[in-house]
Image (tube, rainbow, N blue to C red; front, side):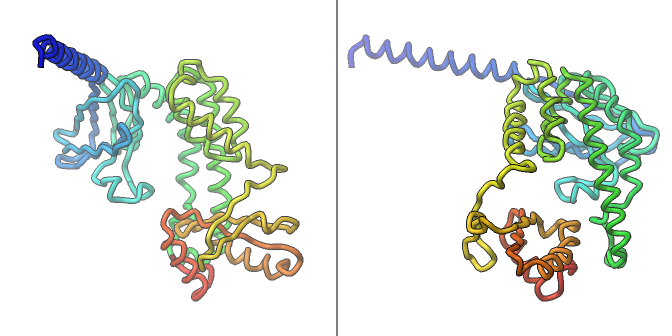
Length: 337
């Protein structure tokens, strides 16, 4: 190997090292420090506070103990804010989030995030950083509707005895559904009033998954600032809106084919010319299961009149819905699953 080639290789290696150092430095400089300080008069020493969020697609779980009625977290995030949750004495990754009794949603961003409370973590007041101050405004505006929603017991949490009262189940489900859509509608109103806050983009992202509110969601999204609409999360919203608008009253249902419980292929296109009711359900969805007796009755009345029902499970695991179907066949549609 000639001296020139050796020198060229050394020079190339130096360039690579320099580039890698620059990239590492840039990546490090992109990291921002955040701090969380919580103060709660009724928090006891050795209470455990959990912090859970996703960063770069990975779930991050941190925890700390309360000392002298306060707790602290420190960490680093990238340039974009991250939604996160705090919970007291219950790790959300080990519990159904619906059963977490004391929790608080926050946004991680550069700076010090402060929570103050006279009682529970859930009732703490947010301050310290721009996003969390705006989040506190949202919490205050939606306080009444959320309290009303909490005052009605969701049938999903009914015990076996309560489930026997079908009138109460239907009444509560109707009220919960109504309040839920009022809540989401008010969140869209908030997003419209704060068109340049990342919180508004995050709200629109969540609500863009709801068919019933897709028109208002699109209107509010279009009114957001160009800064927000240039973010990667905005592309997710655009795709959600585009897909949801394909499924509207008057539109043809998207064609699909799926395997039934016996492994046979069921094609929607083969039902063309019939009246078809497509029912989406899941093994864990109590309101869905409560409708199954009604579907059976509808099939009994109209099943021989060019009418069919296709029931589609949205369970992620095949075994879950197959097990649920077998139980319903052997014990009836209202059996516990």
